[in-house]
Image (tube, rainbow, N blue to C red; front, top):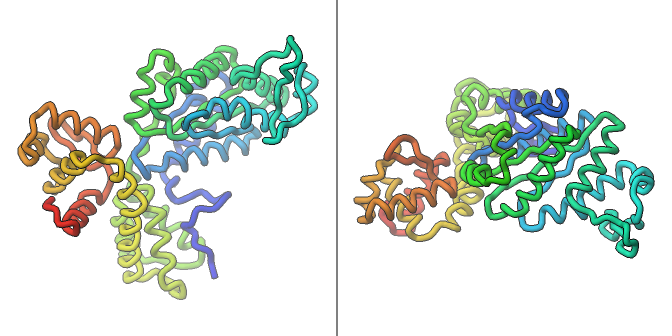
Length: 375
């Protein structure tokens, strides 16, 4: 039985990367162009399910193909400590443990975690810092004409103190023209908050790419190619149903493809029945995987605001939402900003907002009705 080509697997580019080849190529060119290239500091932003983490994985894979070492982290509490005392020491030891010990005094054997530790019994032993670890590893890598890529997912203002430590290290490395690259990812609102910090100036100069909807022709290619390469066929009318079902949402491209593929596996050609059923299955899973977690953190007033928006078939006028909720302009503006920050809604034009995620309006209408609420 042919494996589902839409299931994520190591070494295979997921369909959500289709149409984003140019962004990956820009990053690779930045590594090849050397220190000073703008692409050596890159940030990807986007809503839930837009493919930010997939892009990080893709650039990490390309960097490894070029011989770069990669360390990846998530911007959760303690990420600088993990980089300094776990991830980078582990890379150092796996890269060239003998060279590491030759170049440093006061280093003992491996810790239980597999990293290196400083011997504090010697008064001259320096303290391991993020900067010293980066300098050491880039010095070693320079001898081999390669470098270090650091990636950081889920960047958020809540970790601003640690982001400042990382930013200081990266800026020093860039000034010294070290072979270092940084790629981060996070929600657009969080990235905006972070880059406005006076210490994180280098992030303002970073290449910033917003990952939005995928063009219909790219969605079609992302679905057709895996189907045909796996030995099945698909008609244009069936493909059109699947493409429209995704609404260009990257998360749905893979989800729709996966759900349709697993139906009637004995069919050599994907049927219209499978396409329609698979799209419906994907939308149900979308609710459980994306909308339920996203709404779990929303307050009752947040949800009331969203339900008031769900009355409209398109962008909602803020004045209409105020009237429906019987609240003042300032109060409505506060919740508008909260929901934009949580990536549930977006501003479409002056005085108007719309849902940032596809099918969220439909989901709210259906579940509001099921709960006995009036959207």
